[in-house]
Image (cartoon, rainbow, N blue to C red; front, side, top):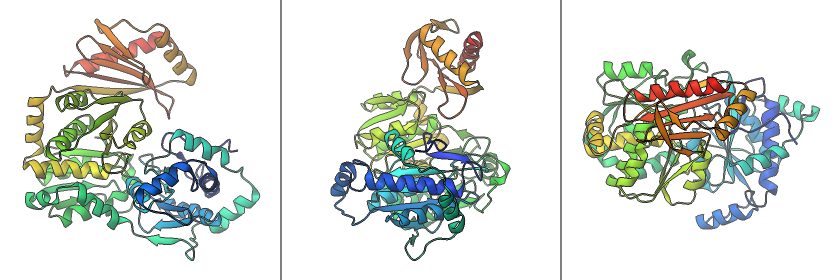
Length: 495
């Protein structure tokens, strides 16, 4: 059983050549191999996987795993280590020829009825960080049960494993592993979800920023095929990501904003390096948060694409979603923070959309996990279908719904301090915040203090870092900052 390799909410992640080494990738692949061959539900002979294949009308003779990598330093070589370890254990491997976005790997798992996929990626971490994601047969990041099972099967580091990972590093067993370009299948899928006729007629001009990541082989290719004029930046290889943290937030998209305004383009779209999250910049260079994009897309899916179902969102995602869901008669369900909880609901097929405030959206009739590529394309689809600018769409949207404003901050704390804060809030929560009575407390994930009038303040510990996160939302544009300030005072009074 491994004591040094632990999965977080989205897989294993560590500093390259520190915790993330060829040896550890090989050990992870061995643990995954054993999980595939032995788990009674999620494994190749497992009840869940067999039932899944029956519904797909497929039956594989031996386990198949998709293996891919992002554009980071050593990602491709580490993917080769994982692929070689899998075939050593009798597992068939289809290896991506090009950098493979996580949502594309997830779609390929479903499309080929694979038992799962390994993607070597650090997602939106710093350039010196990398990791490994395991995608289960249902087309989403592995749940807690799967991760715990793999962890206990990871072998301890031995001289034999070290020697094997050293000699095989960077070389692929091409006699056994099948190399494949997965773009065609995925882009064909996108064409079935996007109004390509409207796209051709709209003659839009947009900017694309893959942030030096794997979106570079997807967004431009799809949009240009259907008549969209594309201006691109950061489509080259740069393992340092231009010296910036490669997330799709407002700071990272400064150059995209300049491109959009300088060339007078309709929109700017971006994805983080493994494409599970997205960023949108409007024609005036304003970064639009997922808390606005997700409700607008939900309204678009229901009105223009006639989709029906329930809606799920993380508890700290904007209440603007509530307004849209209520207007269309859709049942809404809150989840703890972490997209895996949304994925569990999306798998049921009952949900039209799942979303989180940090830039993740899942849509019905696709993968049950977040897809930044699809989110970007759906925003362009919305413009093309409505034949309007984003500014016009936003103005019309807020004629129907009340605009909300939000803010979030993070406070570094020790583990002891975090535990003390959470314990005190549980035992003695505030009864009023900013001179307004607390109407209800939602403890789905941390504490969300819902105030009289509908504004709210949430305080929760990060699941991946030693941080306390504060979130606030209100109809008054200035109120979130005031609520955050009060939240800091509450925390300071405890520690």
